[in-house]
Amino acid sequence: MFKKTALFAAALVGPAAMVGLAATATPAAAQESIPTATVYYTDLDLSTVEGQETLERRLVKTARKVCRMDERAVDSYLPSSSSQACYRKATEKVDGQIAAAMRDQEKAQRYGG
Image (tube, rainbow, N blue to C red):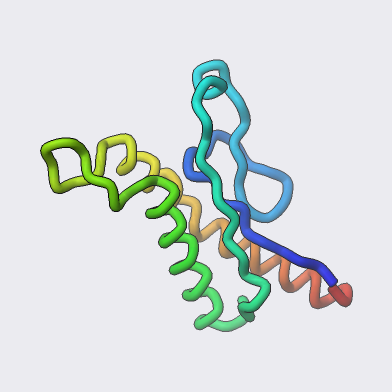
């Protein structure tokens, strides 16, 4: 049985081969750690709207956590500009991650996974 997850990378630089996204190292980014988190969806039926919406909520919630959107900048009620940029980049890819997860789940079902 296949165990599939959507790999979630908050700071995205390039595409990965499997479900989800990963970052490729560049000289500027090599010194920074790129926050990532794993979002599980094996319990969801992604052929349904409900399953897709649940995965989207999980991805967005994880983006908020990984990008530290609940931490406020000094002397502000808002998250830091780096947190906001991280969140924007991460959530831009949510639709693509859901589509990849749907393809992956369909393939696993087709081939007995």
